[in-house]
Image (tube, rainbow over all chains, first blue to last red; front, side, top):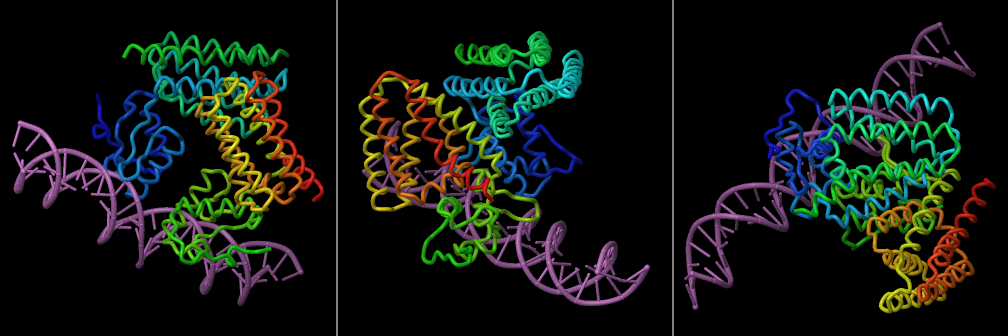
Length: 223
Length: 223
DNA sequence: CCATTTCATTTTATCGATAATTTAGACGTC
DNA sequence: GACGTCTAAATTATCGATAAAATGAAATGG
Protein backbone atom coordinates (compact mmCIF):
# COMPACT_ATOMS: atom_id res chain seq x y z
CA UNK A 1 0.00 0.00 0.00
CA UNK A 2 1.23 3.41 -0.92
CA UNK A 3 1.46 5.86 1.92
CA UNK A 4 0.96 9.57 1.97
CA UNK A 5 4.66 10.22 2.20
CA UNK A 6 5.31 8.66 -1.17
CA UNK A 7 3.28 11.29 -2.95
CA UNK A 8 4.90 14.65 -3.50
CA UNK A 9 3.48 17.76 -5.05
CA UNK A 10 6.50 19.85 -5.98
CA UNK A 11 6.12 23.13 -7.76
CA UNK A 12 2.36 23.38 -7.40
CA UNK A 13 0.78 26.21 -5.48
CA UNK A 14 -1.88 24.95 -3.12
CA UNK A 15 -4.57 26.48 -1.01
CA UNK A 16 -6.79 24.58 1.38
CA UNK A 17 -9.38 23.89 -1.29
CA UNK A 18 -6.98 22.43 -3.80
CA UNK A 19 -5.48 20.25 -1.11
CA UNK A 20 -8.92 19.00 -0.23
CA UNK A 21 -9.60 18.23 -3.88
CA UNK A 22 -6.33 16.40 -4.29
CA UNK A 23 -7.02 14.25 -1.27
CA UNK A 24 -10.57 13.62 -2.42
CA UNK A 25 -9.13 12.23 -5.63
CA UNK A 26 -6.68 10.09 -3.73
CA UNK A 27 -9.55 8.54 -1.91
CA UNK A 28 -11.72 7.74 -4.88
CA UNK A 29 -8.81 6.18 -6.71
CA UNK A 30 -7.96 4.07 -3.73
CA UNK A 31 -4.59 5.68 -3.14
CA UNK A 32 -5.81 6.59 0.33
CA UNK A 33 -7.56 3.74 2.05
CA UNK A 34 -10.34 4.40 4.55
CA UNK A 35 -8.87 4.56 8.03
CA UNK A 36 -5.61 6.12 6.89
CA UNK A 37 -4.38 8.77 9.27
CA UNK A 38 -3.99 12.30 7.99
CA UNK A 39 -1.54 14.24 10.13
CA UNK A 40 -0.96 17.92 9.59
CA UNK A 41 2.76 17.42 9.25
CA UNK A 42 2.32 14.95 6.42
CA UNK A 43 0.20 17.37 4.44
CA UNK A 44 2.69 20.09 5.27
CA UNK A 45 5.49 18.08 3.76
CA UNK A 46 3.53 16.92 0.75
CA UNK A 47 2.02 20.20 -0.33
CA UNK A 48 4.66 22.61 0.93
CA UNK A 49 2.13 24.86 2.58
CA UNK A 50 1.98 26.47 5.98
CA UNK A 51 0.35 24.65 8.85
CA UNK A 52 -2.62 26.98 8.63
CA UNK A 53 -3.61 25.67 5.21
CA UNK A 54 -3.00 22.04 5.98
CA UNK A 55 -5.24 22.45 8.98
CA UNK A 56 -7.87 24.32 7.01
CA UNK A 57 -7.87 21.60 4.37
CA UNK A 58 -8.55 18.96 6.98
CA UNK A 59 -11.43 21.01 8.35
CA UNK A 60 -12.74 21.29 4.78
CA UNK A 61 -12.55 17.55 4.30
CA UNK A 62 -14.35 17.05 7.57
CA UNK A 63 -17.29 19.22 6.58
CA UNK A 64 -17.32 17.48 3.22
CA UNK A 65 -17.81 14.33 5.22
CA UNK A 66 -14.89 12.38 3.79
CA UNK A 67 -12.69 12.64 6.86
CA UNK A 68 -13.35 12.16 10.56
CA UNK A 69 -11.65 14.22 13.23
CA UNK A 70 -11.21 13.45 16.89
CA UNK A 71 -10.18 16.15 19.29
CA UNK A 72 -6.45 16.17 19.94
CA UNK A 73 -6.09 13.06 17.84
CA UNK A 74 -6.21 14.29 14.30
CA UNK A 75 -8.04 13.12 11.23
CA UNK A 76 -8.51 9.78 9.53
CA UNK A 77 -10.06 8.97 6.18
CA UNK A 78 -13.61 8.01 6.90
CA UNK A 79 -14.36 4.34 6.74
CA UNK A 80 -17.90 3.18 6.21
CA UNK A 81 -19.59 0.19 7.77
CA UNK A 82 -22.06 -1.63 5.60
CA UNK A 83 -24.78 -0.23 7.83
CA UNK A 84 -23.65 3.30 7.06
CA UNK A 85 -23.42 2.56 3.36
CA UNK A 86 -26.96 1.25 3.45
CA UNK A 87 -28.15 4.40 5.21
CA UNK A 88 -26.30 6.73 2.89
CA UNK A 89 -27.68 5.02 -0.16
CA UNK A 90 -31.22 5.03 1.20
CA UNK A 91 -30.99 8.79 1.49
CA UNK A 92 -29.24 9.13 -1.88
CA UNK A 93 -32.02 7.20 -3.52
CA UNK A 94 -34.63 9.30 -1.81
CA UNK A 95 -33.03 12.57 -2.87
CA UNK A 96 -32.21 11.59 -6.42
CA UNK A 97 -35.60 10.03 -7.04
CA UNK A 98 -37.35 13.19 -5.91
CA UNK A 99 -35.04 15.41 -7.96
CA UNK A 100 -35.83 13.31 -11.03
CA UNK A 101 -39.53 13.57 -10.32
CA UNK A 102 -39.30 17.35 -10.10
CA UNK A 103 -37.55 17.84 -13.44
CA UNK A 104 -40.04 19.45 -15.84
CA UNK A 105 -40.43 17.17 -18.85
CA UNK A 106 -39.77 17.28 -21.69
CA UNK A 107 -36.51 19.01 -20.85
CA UNK A 108 -35.38 22.08 -22.83
CA UNK A 109 -33.00 21.56 -25.75
CA UNK A 110 -30.11 23.41 -24.12
CA UNK A 111 -30.11 20.98 -21.22
CA UNK A 112 -30.16 18.01 -23.58
CA UNK A 113 -27.28 19.55 -25.50
CA UNK A 114 -25.24 20.22 -22.38
CA UNK A 115 -25.77 16.72 -21.07
CA UNK A 116 -25.01 15.17 -24.44
CA UNK A 117 -21.71 17.02 -24.54
CA UNK A 118 -20.82 15.81 -21.05
CA UNK A 119 -21.94 12.33 -22.00
CA UNK A 120 -19.64 12.22 -25.00
CA UNK A 121 -16.70 13.49 -22.99
CA UNK A 122 -17.46 10.87 -20.38
CA UNK A 123 -17.50 8.18 -23.07
CA UNK A 124 -14.12 9.27 -24.40
CA UNK A 125 -12.59 9.13 -20.94
CA UNK A 126 -14.05 5.68 -20.31
CA UNK A 127 -12.59 4.30 -23.51
CA UNK A 128 -9.21 5.91 -23.02
CA UNK A 129 -9.12 4.74 -19.42
CA UNK A 130 -8.60 8.24 -18.04
CA UNK A 131 -10.20 7.67 -14.67
CA UNK A 132 -9.82 11.17 -13.32
CA UNK A 133 -11.79 12.46 -16.29
CA UNK A 134 -14.39 9.73 -15.94
CA UNK A 135 -15.04 10.63 -12.35
CA UNK A 136 -15.19 14.35 -13.00
CA UNK A 137 -17.49 14.24 -16.01
CA UNK A 138 -19.67 11.66 -14.28
CA UNK A 139 -20.26 13.97 -11.33
CA UNK A 140 -20.80 16.99 -13.56
CA UNK A 141 -23.30 15.00 -15.59
CA UNK A 142 -25.38 14.12 -12.58
CA UNK A 143 -25.23 17.55 -11.00
CA UNK A 144 -26.31 19.10 -14.29
CA UNK A 145 -29.10 16.59 -14.65
CA UNK A 146 -30.45 17.01 -11.14
CA UNK A 147 -29.89 20.75 -11.34
CA UNK A 148 -32.81 20.79 -13.75
CA UNK A 149 -35.15 20.03 -10.86
CA UNK A 150 -34.94 23.71 -9.98
CA UNK A 151 -34.25 23.21 -6.27
CA UNK A 152 -30.68 24.24 -5.57
CA UNK A 153 -30.83 23.09 -1.98
CA UNK A 154 -31.84 19.63 -3.03
CA UNK A 155 -28.96 19.58 -5.50
CA UNK A 156 -26.58 20.63 -2.76
CA UNK A 157 -27.71 17.77 -0.58
CA UNK A 158 -27.35 15.37 -3.48
CA UNK A 159 -23.81 16.64 -3.92
CA UNK A 160 -23.10 16.06 -0.25
CA UNK A 161 -24.24 12.46 -0.46
CA UNK A 162 -22.26 11.93 -3.64
CA UNK A 163 -19.19 12.82 -1.64
CA UNK A 164 -20.20 10.68 1.30
CA UNK A 165 -20.39 7.69 -1.02
CA UNK A 166 -17.00 8.40 -2.57
CA UNK A 167 -15.29 5.35 -1.05
CA UNK A 168 -18.19 3.19 -2.16
CA UNK A 169 -17.99 4.37 -5.72
CA UNK A 170 -14.23 3.97 -5.80
CA UNK A 171 -14.53 0.23 -6.43
CA UNK A 172 -16.59 0.66 -9.55
CA UNK A 173 -13.96 2.78 -11.22
CA UNK A 174 -11.68 -0.17 -11.68
CA UNK A 175 -13.61 -2.17 -14.28
CA UNK A 176 -14.13 -0.77 -17.74
CA UNK A 177 -17.20 -2.96 -18.13
CA UNK A 178 -19.05 -1.35 -15.25
CA UNK A 179 -18.04 2.08 -16.49
CA UNK A 180 -19.58 1.22 -19.85
CA UNK A 181 -22.82 0.13 -18.21
CA UNK A 182 -22.89 3.37 -16.27
CA UNK A 183 -22.29 5.28 -19.48
CA UNK A 184 -25.17 3.50 -21.15
CA UNK A 185 -27.42 4.47 -18.23
CA UNK A 186 -26.54 8.08 -18.87
CA UNK A 187 -27.59 7.73 -22.48
CA UNK A 188 -30.94 6.35 -21.41
CA UNK A 189 -31.41 9.23 -18.99
CA UNK A 190 -30.92 11.71 -21.78
CA UNK A 191 -33.51 9.82 -23.82
CA UNK A 192 -35.95 9.93 -20.93
CA UNK A 193 -35.46 13.70 -20.63
CA UNK A 194 -36.90 14.05 -24.10
CA UNK A 195 -40.05 12.20 -23.04
CA UNK A 196 -42.70 12.98 -20.48
CA UNK A 197 -42.49 10.19 -17.93
CA UNK A 198 -40.81 11.38 -14.73
CA UNK A 199 -41.37 8.06 -13.02
CA UNK A 200 -39.36 6.07 -15.51
CA UNK A 201 -36.58 8.62 -15.27
CA UNK A 202 -36.64 8.50 -11.48
CA UNK A 203 -36.51 4.72 -11.46
CA UNK A 204 -33.57 4.81 -13.85
CA UNK A 205 -31.73 7.22 -11.57
CA UNK A 206 -32.26 4.94 -8.60
CA UNK A 207 -31.28 1.80 -10.51
CA UNK A 208 -28.15 3.57 -11.65
CA UNK A 209 -26.94 3.68 -8.04
CA UNK A 210 -27.32 -0.02 -7.38
CA UNK A 211 -24.27 -1.63 -9.01
CA UNK A 212 -21.58 0.19 -7.03
CA UNK A 213 -23.54 -0.14 -3.81
CA UNK A 214 -24.01 -3.88 -4.30
CA UNK A 215 -20.40 -4.38 -5.30
CA UNK A 216 -19.20 -2.57 -2.18
CA UNK A 217 -21.54 -4.40 0.18
CA UNK A 218 -20.53 -7.73 -1.31
CA UNK A 219 -16.91 -6.71 -0.89
CA UNK A 220 -17.14 -5.78 2.78
CA UNK A 221 -19.31 -8.77 3.70
CA UNK A 222 -16.61 -11.19 2.59
CA UNK A 223 -14.05 -9.55 4.87
CA UNK B 1 -33.02 47.32 16.39
CA UNK B 2 -30.53 45.98 18.83
CA UNK B 3 -27.03 45.62 17.50
CA UNK B 4 -24.38 43.11 18.34
CA UNK B 5 -22.45 45.59 20.39
CA UNK B 6 -25.26 45.97 22.88
CA UNK B 7 -24.95 42.38 23.96
CA UNK B 8 -22.16 41.48 26.33
CA UNK B 9 -21.19 38.13 27.70
CA UNK B 10 -19.06 38.90 30.72
CA UNK B 11 -17.72 36.19 32.91
CA UNK B 12 -18.67 33.31 30.64
CA UNK B 13 -16.05 31.03 29.14
CA UNK B 14 -16.63 30.51 25.47
CA UNK B 15 -15.26 28.24 22.80
CA UNK B 16 -16.17 28.39 19.14
CA UNK B 17 -19.08 26.02 19.55
CA UNK B 18 -20.71 27.89 22.39
CA UNK B 19 -20.32 31.13 20.46
CA UNK B 20 -22.01 29.53 17.48
CA UNK B 21 -24.84 28.35 19.70
CA UNK B 22 -25.28 31.76 21.29
CA UNK B 23 -25.48 33.41 17.92
CA UNK B 24 -27.86 30.76 16.66
CA UNK B 25 -30.16 31.67 19.50
CA UNK B 26 -29.84 35.36 18.73
CA UNK B 27 -31.04 34.64 15.26
CA UNK B 28 -34.05 32.56 16.17
CA UNK B 29 -35.18 35.12 18.71
CA UNK B 30 -34.84 37.89 16.19
CA UNK B 31 -32.09 39.69 18.08
CA UNK B 32 -29.92 39.29 15.00
CA UNK B 33 -31.76 40.15 11.82
CA UNK B 34 -30.88 38.43 8.55
CA UNK B 35 -28.32 40.51 6.69
CA UNK B 36 -26.60 41.71 9.86
CA UNK B 37 -22.87 41.82 9.52
CA UNK B 38 -20.76 39.68 11.82
CA UNK B 39 -17.24 41.07 12.14
CA UNK B 40 -14.56 39.18 13.97
CA UNK B 41 -13.80 42.18 16.14
CA UNK B 42 -17.38 42.42 17.31
CA UNK B 43 -17.40 38.80 18.41
CA UNK B 44 -14.01 39.36 19.99
CA UNK B 45 -15.38 42.16 22.09
CA UNK B 46 -18.60 40.42 22.97
CA UNK B 47 -17.28 37.05 23.98
CA UNK B 48 -13.82 38.03 25.19
CA UNK B 49 -12.12 35.32 23.21
CA UNK B 50 -9.08 35.30 21.01
CA UNK B 51 -9.43 36.02 17.31
CA UNK B 52 -8.87 32.37 16.56
CA UNK B 53 -12.10 31.33 18.26
CA UNK B 54 -14.20 34.14 16.86
CA UNK B 55 -13.01 33.11 13.44
CA UNK B 56 -13.66 29.44 14.07
CA UNK B 57 -17.14 30.22 15.29
CA UNK B 58 -17.93 32.05 12.09
CA UNK B 59 -16.66 29.11 10.06
CA UNK B 60 -18.89 26.88 12.19
CA UNK B 61 -21.90 29.04 11.54
CA UNK B 62 -21.12 28.96 7.85
CA UNK B 63 -21.09 25.19 7.67
CA UNK B 64 -24.27 25.15 9.73
CA UNK B 65 -25.72 27.22 6.93
CA UNK B 66 -26.92 30.13 9.05
CA UNK B 67 -24.24 32.58 7.98
CA UNK B 68 -22.79 33.50 4.59
CA UNK B 69 -19.13 34.37 4.13
CA UNK B 70 -17.52 36.30 1.30
CA UNK B 71 -13.78 36.25 0.87
CA UNK B 72 -12.09 39.27 2.45
CA UNK B 73 -15.46 40.69 3.31
CA UNK B 74 -16.56 38.79 6.35
CA UNK B 75 -19.80 37.14 7.31
CA UNK B 76 -23.42 38.22 7.33
CA UNK B 77 -26.42 36.48 8.83
CA UNK B 78 -28.02 34.58 6.01
CA UNK B 79 -31.15 36.13 4.59
CA UNK B 80 -33.57 33.95 2.73
CA UNK B 81 -35.58 34.90 -0.32
CA UNK B 82 -39.05 33.44 -0.55
CA UNK B 83 -37.74 31.25 -3.35
CA UNK B 84 -35.09 29.82 -1.03
CA UNK B 85 -37.60 29.29 1.74
CA UNK B 86 -39.80 27.41 -0.67
CA UNK B 87 -36.88 25.22 -1.74
CA UNK B 88 -35.74 24.55 1.79
CA UNK B 89 -39.19 23.57 2.89
CA UNK B 90 -39.72 21.34 -0.12
CA UNK B 91 -36.64 19.39 0.95
CA UNK B 92 -37.61 19.49 4.62
CA UNK B 93 -40.98 18.02 3.78
CA UNK B 94 -39.38 15.35 1.64
CA UNK B 95 -36.94 14.33 4.36
CA UNK B 96 -39.33 14.42 7.27
CA UNK B 97 -42.06 12.59 5.40
CA UNK B 98 -39.68 9.79 4.53
CA UNK B 99 -38.32 9.60 8.07
CA UNK B 100 -41.87 9.29 9.38
CA UNK B 101 -42.61 6.57 6.87
CA UNK B 102 -39.56 4.62 7.96
CA UNK B 103 -40.40 4.62 11.68
CA UNK B 104 -41.41 1.07 12.67
CA UNK B 105 -44.93 1.21 14.10
CA UNK B 106 -46.18 0.78 16.69
CA UNK B 107 -43.24 2.46 18.37
CA UNK B 108 -41.60 0.91 21.46
CA UNK B 109 -42.74 2.11 24.86
CA UNK B 110 -39.42 3.69 25.77
CA UNK B 111 -39.65 6.00 22.78
CA UNK B 112 -43.19 6.98 23.68
CA UNK B 113 -42.05 7.67 27.22
CA UNK B 114 -39.09 9.75 26.13
CA UNK B 115 -41.20 11.81 23.75
CA UNK B 116 -43.94 12.26 26.31
CA UNK B 117 -41.42 13.64 28.78
CA UNK B 118 -40.09 16.07 26.20
CA UNK B 119 -43.63 16.96 25.26
CA UNK B 120 -44.54 17.86 28.81
CA UNK B 121 -41.42 19.94 29.27
CA UNK B 122 -42.23 21.70 26.02
CA UNK B 123 -45.73 22.43 27.25
CA UNK B 124 -44.45 23.92 30.49
CA UNK B 125 -42.09 26.20 28.60
CA UNK B 126 -44.86 27.31 26.27
CA UNK B 127 -47.14 28.24 29.15
CA UNK B 128 -44.44 30.00 31.13
CA UNK B 129 -43.30 31.85 28.02
CA UNK B 130 -39.73 30.60 28.29
CA UNK B 131 -38.88 30.77 24.60
CA UNK B 132 -35.38 29.42 24.82
CA UNK B 133 -36.73 26.29 26.42
CA UNK B 134 -39.54 26.02 23.90
CA UNK B 135 -37.13 26.11 21.03
CA UNK B 136 -34.73 23.64 22.58
CA UNK B 137 -37.30 21.04 23.62
CA UNK B 138 -39.06 21.43 20.30
CA UNK B 139 -35.93 20.54 18.38
CA UNK B 140 -35.08 17.71 20.75
CA UNK B 141 -38.60 16.34 20.34
CA UNK B 142 -38.35 16.23 16.58
CA UNK B 143 -34.85 14.82 16.49
CA UNK B 144 -35.87 12.09 18.91
CA UNK B 145 -38.97 11.34 16.90
CA UNK B 146 -37.20 11.15 13.56
CA UNK B 147 -34.30 9.35 15.14
CA UNK B 148 -36.65 6.39 15.43
CA UNK B 149 -36.48 5.93 11.66
CA UNK B 150 -33.15 4.23 12.22
CA UNK B 151 -31.22 6.17 9.58
CA UNK B 152 -28.77 8.47 11.31
CA UNK B 153 -27.71 10.14 8.08
CA UNK B 154 -31.27 11.06 7.28
CA UNK B 155 -31.63 12.50 10.76
CA UNK B 156 -28.47 14.52 10.28
CA UNK B 157 -29.83 16.00 7.08
CA UNK B 158 -33.10 16.79 8.80
CA UNK B 159 -31.12 18.59 11.47
CA UNK B 160 -29.29 20.57 8.83
CA UNK B 161 -32.52 21.74 7.28
CA UNK B 162 -33.97 22.58 10.68
CA UNK B 163 -31.10 24.99 11.08
CA UNK B 164 -31.45 26.35 7.60
CA UNK B 165 -35.03 27.25 8.37
CA UNK B 166 -34.16 28.94 11.66
CA UNK B 167 -35.00 32.46 10.49
CA UNK B 168 -38.28 31.18 9.09
CA UNK B 169 -39.27 29.55 12.34
CA UNK B 170 -38.26 32.61 14.34
CA UNK B 171 -41.53 34.36 13.54
CA UNK B 172 -43.67 31.61 14.97
CA UNK B 173 -42.04 31.85 18.35
CA UNK B 174 -43.68 35.15 19.06
CA UNK B 175 -47.30 34.06 19.44
CA UNK B 176 -48.35 31.79 22.26
CA UNK B 177 -51.33 30.67 20.21
CA UNK B 178 -49.17 29.20 17.44
CA UNK B 179 -46.93 27.58 20.02
CA UNK B 180 -49.98 25.89 21.51
CA UNK B 181 -51.05 24.58 18.12
CA UNK B 182 -47.57 23.25 17.55
CA UNK B 183 -47.68 21.61 20.96
CA UNK B 184 -50.99 19.95 20.13
CA UNK B 185 -49.46 18.59 16.92
CA UNK B 186 -46.78 16.95 18.99
CA UNK B 187 -49.41 15.26 21.11
CA UNK B 188 -51.06 13.87 18.01
CA UNK B 189 -47.73 12.59 16.75
CA UNK B 190 -47.22 10.64 19.95
CA UNK B 191 -50.70 9.18 19.54
CA UNK B 192 -49.89 8.16 15.98
CA UNK B 193 -46.73 6.42 17.15
CA UNK B 194 -48.91 4.06 19.16
CA UNK B 195 -50.84 3.10 16.04
CA UNK B 196 -49.79 1.42 12.81
CA UNK B 197 -50.44 3.99 10.11
CA UNK B 198 -47.17 5.54 8.92
CA UNK B 199 -48.93 7.57 6.26
CA UNK B 200 -51.06 9.50 8.69
CA UNK B 201 -48.02 10.17 10.84
CA UNK B 202 -46.05 11.34 7.82
CA UNK B 203 -48.83 13.66 6.72
CA UNK B 204 -49.01 15.10 10.21
CA UNK B 205 -45.28 15.76 10.20
CA UNK B 206 -45.56 17.60 6.91
CA UNK B 207 -48.62 19.58 7.97
CA UNK B 208 -46.79 20.55 11.13
CA UNK B 209 -44.30 22.52 9.02
CA UNK B 210 -46.84 24.60 7.16
CA UNK B 211 -47.86 27.32 9.62
CA UNK B 212 -44.43 28.91 10.12
CA UNK B 213 -43.63 28.60 6.44
CA UNK B 214 -46.87 30.28 5.41
CA UNK B 215 -46.50 32.99 8.01
CA UNK B 216 -43.00 33.79 6.80
CA UNK B 217 -43.92 33.79 3.13
CA UNK B 218 -46.87 36.05 3.80
CA UNK B 219 -44.59 38.33 5.78
CA UNK B 220 -41.94 38.70 3.09
CA UNK B 221 -44.46 39.10 0.27
CA UNK B 222 -45.91 42.20 1.88
CA UNK B 223 -42.52 43.90 1.99
C1' DC C 1 6.43 -10.98 35.26
C1' DC C 2 2.74 -7.70 35.49
C1' DA C 3 1.00 -3.26 36.58
C1' DT C 4 1.92 1.61 37.10
C1' DT C 5 4.23 5.76 36.62
C1' DT C 6 7.30 8.78 34.32
C1' DC C 7 9.04 10.95 30.51
C1' DA C 8 10.21 11.96 25.69
C1' DT C 9 8.06 12.27 21.32
C1' DT C 10 4.54 13.23 18.24
C1' DT C 11 0.66 15.78 17.06
C1' DT C 12 -2.92 19.03 17.53
C1' DA C 13 -4.67 23.49 19.61
C1' DT C 14 -4.07 28.16 20.51
C1' DC C 15 -2.14 32.57 20.27
C1' DG C 16 -0.64 37.41 19.00
C1' DA C 17 1.49 39.73 15.35
C1' DT C 18 1.86 40.96 10.65
C1' DA C 19 0.41 40.95 5.77
C1' DA C 20 -3.03 41.51 2.37
C1' DT C 21 -7.46 43.02 0.91
C1' DT C 22 -11.48 45.76 0.63
C1' DT C 23 -14.03 49.99 1.39
C1' DA C 24 -15.22 54.58 1.58
C1' DG C 25 -14.18 59.21 1.53
C1' DA C 26 -11.15 63.04 -0.02
C1' DC C 27 -9.23 65.06 -3.80
C1' DG C 28 -8.28 66.50 -8.29
C1' DT C 29 -9.46 66.44 -13.28
C1' DC C 30 -12.43 66.78 -17.25
C1' DG D 1 -21.42 67.60 -11.45
C1' DA D 2 -19.59 63.04 -13.05
C1' DC D 3 -15.78 60.23 -13.08
C1' DG D 4 -11.57 58.15 -11.81
C1' DT D 5 -7.49 57.90 -8.58
C1' DC D 6 -5.44 57.89 -4.39
C1' DT D 7 -5.02 57.40 0.49
C1' DA D 8 -6.42 55.83 5.39
C1' DA D 9 -9.25 53.04 8.00
C1' DA D 10 -11.35 48.75 8.81
C1' DT D 11 -11.34 43.98 8.35
C1' DT D 12 -9.98 39.50 7.05
C1' DA D 13 -6.15 36.22 5.84
C1' DT D 14 -1.93 34.29 6.91
C1' DC D 15 1.96 33.10 9.49
C1' DG D 16 5.44 31.08 12.81
C1' DA D 17 5.89 30.24 17.53
C1' DT D 18 4.36 28.39 21.73
C1' DA D 19 1.15 25.70 24.67
C1' DA D 20 -1.44 21.69 25.55
C1' DA D 21 -2.69 17.09 24.92
C1' DA D 22 -2.15 12.27 23.67
C1' DT D 23 0.78 8.42 22.76
C1' DG D 24 4.01 4.89 23.40
C1' DA D 25 8.28 3.38 25.38
C1' DA D 26 11.22 3.00 29.22
C1' DA D 27 11.76 2.78 34.05
C1' DT D 28 10.13 1.59 38.53
C1' DG D 29 7.91 -0.97 42.21
C1' DG D 30 5.32 -4.86 43.73
